[in-house]
Length: 102
Image (cartoon, rainbow, N blue to C red; front, side, top):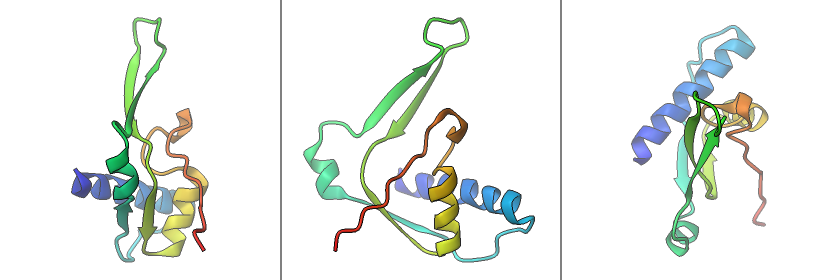
């Protein structure tokens, strides 16, 4: 659900903005666009990772591995690039690589 992903991503990045700058974010929302050519060529772009697989308190996390373009406030995008996009960043999730197609 693209709208839900956009919403969660924006909430997460603005919370990080508040922690870093000690200010509430008042700028524009971001726009995320998936690379649909890539997605349509793949059988699956989601991936499940199990944390503590052999423990009683194991946790399944489902993420997306697909190229995307993010437009909007460069400061908010930089925060995501530096800290991770989405949730579970402390576990290594949310990493994005910047790719220049020029």
